[in-house]
Image 1: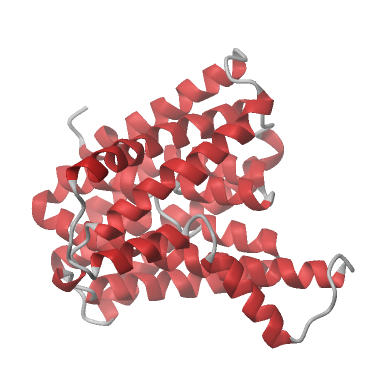
Image 2: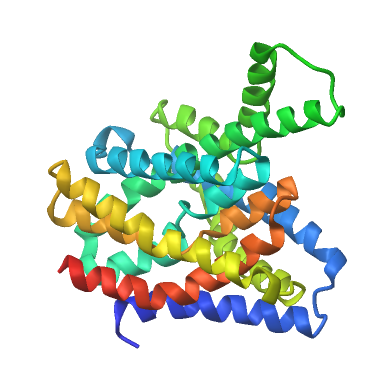
Length: 313
């Protein structure tokens, strides 16, 4: 149990399992899942994202390795999107293949394996993880949804500039990018957060990870995994194998090395983050597949992350 990978992953697996049992026993009914999803997406994650950005010291961050991480993740996202065909569903699936569980699994894993120095690199990544990847995915999905609605006759045809403008507006006025942007702007004031405000935000933010993982388990109990197992295995393989290989090879080729490279590669090898599950529920795209992928990738990561960390040493 002192192994860093097992110590970080087993609590996550246990939380999903508890949610699964609660769902099977009907302790949480199917009609309540949407309300729980709204609680996590519209309340808990708001507090987490705003507090993270509002308290981040952006001027102290080393952005070289993090910038490369996002270049690799972005390139993989668009490659998967075009390979699967341009659709909002494909965008959600592509996001699942690049969005890591950096908070619930990444923080304890890196802390145990690399100590405080490793956490500095990881927190630099976490401070912009949702801002970069979720904002990118939101803009792309909103554009694709607008195109799909126009093609199906559900919305009047607009000039491309108007479509892009509407999509960007919807992406900014969105439950994920908006608190990040507001938190970032607040951090520029240098005022900090008063404890009266900061403590409730911290309590809400700390509740996000456990509640989101329990919700994954509840949804998993109501999902037929069999039909989605093959797709979930593909997503999990890209997330926990292809993503870290690309990050390691490209990072090494461009001269990145040492602890910075190790932390970025481990971050890329982490399983699918719960935010993607919430994204799929919000847009009603690939919900069962993403739910299965979160669970499958978490179990698969026990082996793949162990191998990745062994190779990095």
